[in-house]
Amino acid sequence: MLALQNASALPYQQKRLNATTALPPRVAPTYVQPLRRSAAYNTVHTKPCGLRPVLFKHQQQHVQHTRPSVAASASPTDLIGLGLFFAPGLAAVAYALYLGKGNLNDGLSRLLTEVSQGYFQPDVGGKNIPVSEGQLSDLAGDQPLFKALYQWFIDYGGVYKLAFGPKAFIVVSDPVVVRHILKENTFNYDKGVLAEILEPIMGKGLIPADLDTWKVRRRAVVPAFHKQYYEVMAKMFGDCTMRSVQKLDEAIAAGQRDAVVDMESEFLNLGLEIIGLGVFNYDFGAINKESPVIKAVYGVLKEAEHRSTFYIPYWNIPITKYIVPRQVQFHADLRVINDCLDSLIQNAQETRQEDDSEALQNRDYSKVKDPSLLRFLVDMRGEDATNKQLRDDLMTMLIAGHETTAAVLTWALFCLTQKPAAMAKVVEEVDRVVGDRMPNLDDIRAMSYTRATLGESLRLYPQPPLLIRRALSEDKLPPGLNGDPNGYPIGKGADIFISVWNLHHSPHLWKDPEEFRPERFTESFENPGFNGAWAGYRPEASPGALYPNEVTSDFGFIPFGGGARKCIGDQFALFEATVALAMLVRRFDFQLAVKPSQVGMATGATIHTANGMPMRVTRRKPAELKQVEPQVAGAV
Ligand code: HEM
Image (cartoon, helix red, strand yellow):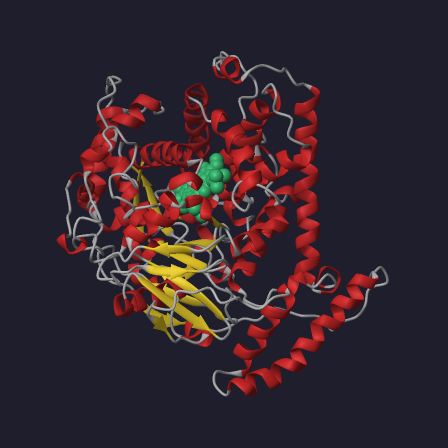
């Protein structure tokens, strides 16, 4: 299990903003279930961008289980569940002994996983794929999952199999193979174990949705992200960032000259406010930070994190929702959020003004009171999604769009403080393009270096570091770099991890992959070893693109995924992050308040810090701020 540190022990916290301390320190978004692994907490201590991280192990922390007692309201199904809960535990002892290797924890966890899911892994082929014989306890031990996957990628190549007892995962780190899975044969794959984890939270929302549901909902949701919507959103991003500016100013005033602020917490606040307003016109910023809704959002995210990194899915046993405190709390939190979303949906339904998609896109959004995605989805003619489906969609976007963007901003600021020359270029660009105005869409397009900085942060710290797929029928993976020329036949049910981390750090795809250098995205890169199967990195392949992407990199750079199930909020996130970063670095000077080596990187479903991102913040001297006229948008 990935433990969440109690940040209250940190000295810099004394100077944290009041508003930020009210929130739980960190929780992770839940795109991926990397691997169910035994209880452990790993951090990777980063060195300044450009240096390889140094790994070390932290203490373990276990889930608090209460003594099992059957609740008065337990149904017969729950009692069967209780029986199931114990029987495999006993059998596991024999199972572990039978295996004659590994530890009891591995054996127990494996068996529980299999039994509670009600099946044993079928033979999923991939017989000629190199096998990394690891134990789950290896992963939980000395290093975080993605790091172990990276080392095995270097040892075994771009396609290898991780065999853990009866389960096997195919780990893919080769752009040619990734392109095949995400684009060329995209509909042969669904989200597999990821969907199993997320379904209780997101229902049939876009991320975990089965293909039939996904096709209908994707078609409905895409038009909601139209140009006018983004125009209004850009303004909203600026307004919300001004709240952060005010909070930083107040903290500086309280500290007389400067303040030490956990910028990760601040970006989480900002991200939550923005996603609430953009998706369902709910202002998290205007409610008390002790509000049950905010607490519930963080509670649910925390549980999703727990589920994605704890490989015994005990929560599938029905009775656990009555007897395991964190499961009881999780269900209570879900109810709070669902009640809130239901009432917002109800309200939107009651004020529905039906129109066709084109007319909705051409509304005068400067006069529209509620420009949210929810309003659009409810008003769209012919769009008769049930309230349950709408709620699933909203919940998915709330979770998908909040911490991801906060993490990008956190790591981008970290990288920039470690590379003053890059920071100076960003500040110069912001001064020149926007000055003290709030950036609009044209400004965002004109700030190409600032956007490249965000892209480079996403390369080094991808959120999420792994994508999950399961084959719906047989397939043949291409060989990729130095692979078996015959390719790799795989069977129905094969579970795949696409390692975004490995792609983004691959020495086969990037020059000096560990270096933070936004300029790299303007340079071409080729690797003749692919014999033409990989087109290389070509900036000219997608002229005018908002960020380097799967087209310019031929699936070597996929921060937002690629193919049919690519992130639907990529532009939203990029616009948001650009506005926030530009406005903050224009007004404040940030210096990391601890040594870079003390910025721990917690690993789980995504990459976030272990201890927050303490920054010493000062106001840039007024003389340094150059007032400039708005500039006509330039080419991206
Ligand atoms: C920097 C911020 C973000 C990052 C790095 C990010 C990353 C991703 C990635 C990698 C995927 C693909 C997952 C897969 O293929 O398994 C994805 C999917 C998705 N993202 Fe994002 N995302 C971000 C922000 C957002 C925002 C702001 C929203 C909503 C407003 C959003 C909504 C979604 C949805 C709904 C999907 C599922 C798309 C589908 O399956 O059709 N994301 N995101």
